[in-house]
Length: 513
Image (cartoon, rainbow, N blue to C red):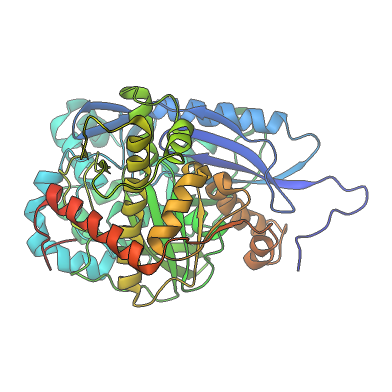
């Protein structure tokens, strides 16, 4: 089947899709054939007040969202906008005033580790409980602990709560509230699952854990399915009043768009971080306490049905490239890194880049781990360093894929890749060699997370009859086949494990997560 053809004389139909990522916001119309029209982008600042803290300005997020949405609507060119779909970074949390509509504090970003040490005290008692109930351990960050501390320590936040003015939510909740002009305070399954307080099987908040952290349960947003109608957009705000018909976490939306519609079908998105996800079916897969950093979560929830998934992520991939270029000035652009890397060979005794710039989750749990560039000599050139950078990122993704496959108990049936960094041919050649399996970069890899939530919203709006219809109608991508044999692959993975051990120490066993 193919997506519904345009009837003679009838205007094209589409979904206004928003993708609010960590470093920028995009919007564009996803048309009734499943393709994306012109995409508009605005960067969003990320600040690092100290080595453990990562923050953003919620108003900048909102202004950027509004700007790109208005640009996309202005470029609609007669297309009938049937709905709005929202994709967001997930566990970034915001506290705001329902009366003024203004944030009370900077948003605390999902990479933030300021309470990692405090959370260690909960691990022994709560990790087994949370792994079984929520699919993830205590971890290194908690939006609920952050909010509880702000209420306890900041008089203006405490006053807002006392007076019934305080609202809490992740970025999706903040944008839903803004787009509906305060009519809806809600979140969806794929976003709630990343907060660490979502009961997988019950589709409910884990209020026992959340309140144990000191968070007031009355502040929790309403829990909805990912394809729920979340209200109507405010015409005076956005310029159009249509249903806000889907809201998904970014990696979940990408998994959908990249075809992860049944168990064993997976994806890797190379963005700010690297995320490896695989669908596991309608029953959640149980995380294994002996495998670090692999989380069970809702892939997405349609009505009363949830397709579950496993996920592992590394915090710094695209952000590592940006750091090397913008902050250190070692390279002009990420593209230059790829071009230089393509001219260099792997050197057994050459440089190694360990990209743990915001801690490590896989293969061991080290929230305070730092990155390293080692193995340098007077013979080392810029191309050698560029090659080491891409190899370090690719090995990190291998660790994620290995951990997810071991937890699933089966190899991936297919691995599609997307995200901005996946546009690097040299990176994907290295990646295919180290994984020993073909990778398919989808034809429009950079918009996977933008399209996923739009496909879900468009299904409800009647643009397609099924997700399979629109996903499988998209053009085939480029395939990267491994060129290295099993011996070479094994040698290079063994070299990497030695590099990791040197920086992380001996690998713990059951205590790792």
